[in-house]
Length: 330
Image (cartoon, helix red, strand yellow):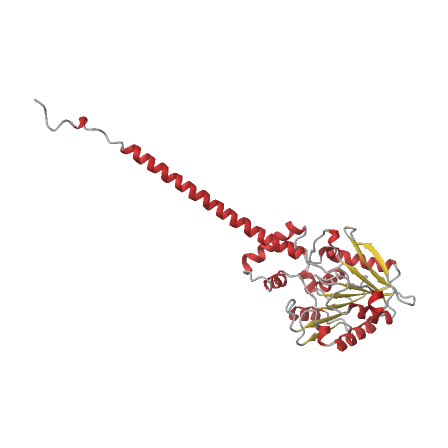
């Protein structure tokens, strides 16, 4: 006689463990795919951020420059010589124009051009200034910083290498017989002049128009005026990327020493009160540091923007600069 129901051992066994194993494996496969995709997306985002800030650092170190459009002879009838000379460290080679005085003279003015400028300083009546100095029996040197010449394949360094190039220019005119050297700088070229003056006693006076001091804040302020970037982490990333892209770090710029130094030579600061690139308060602070020198002075022009003081008052510009030249020249 059969037993009903049959023993449990007689029932077929369902393959539940197999079903669970396949489900787990499938779930883990999905998780790995999602994780891998997320890693790719995050990596691509990080690479794009690095590339973006690297490009900004490259742009900072390689500004666009116009080609030379004229020369002293064509512009104002001044005879000149094509000249070339090395930087103080022989790390770069500079080209320029030397305009000798009609009479033998030991007085020379060197122009130090702005960040995106060249020896012609397109924002200024540079040839008219050279002609006015020529009438005062000054020799004049107009030259290009190495980074302004694409053929040199070098980057802008915030005045670190450029100050050595300016010192090379000073050495060059001294070798030509100059005993009195005045440097007339514009914007970043003015800031570079201040860096150079920390390293030599061969600069006898400075005229500094729209002085730009490359502090982290002023550098970022100028970037932000063109690209609306958050201060963090933008400032940190740009300063981190700059030396890798351009070879020299912006942190090497001695801006703190420049801002705290009382220079031993007379300085004439020219600045616009509405300068949008270099706040006039910084330059006022610089000028206040020079109070012990009776020949140092500052002209803050109301309503003038960066490198546009001359445009707001051409007559006043020439009058004040030439009066300073007369006071400090031997």
